[in-house]
Image (cartoon, rainbow, N blue to C red; front, side):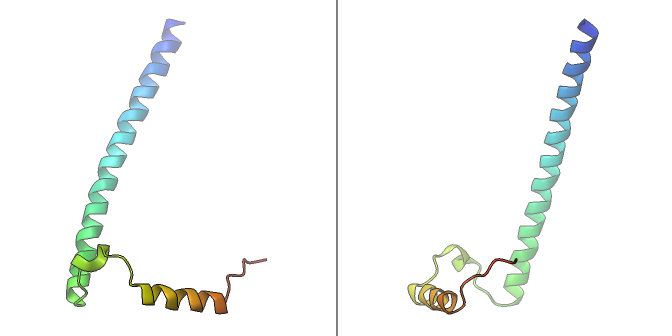
Length: 76
């Protein structure tokens, strides 16, 4: 019984370590992706600082009007 408990404990610890390593790699890739996106935005003269700003009301109304003219139809 102790052997089974030990093996289960080892399996849980290895799973947690694997998850931590995967998350670390995922975070590293996300940072690299963000850096590349900022570089692309800079090359296309898009203002990176205003990317977190809310969308203007007039643009929202334009998108709402377009959506109401062509409502979403789920695939059958």
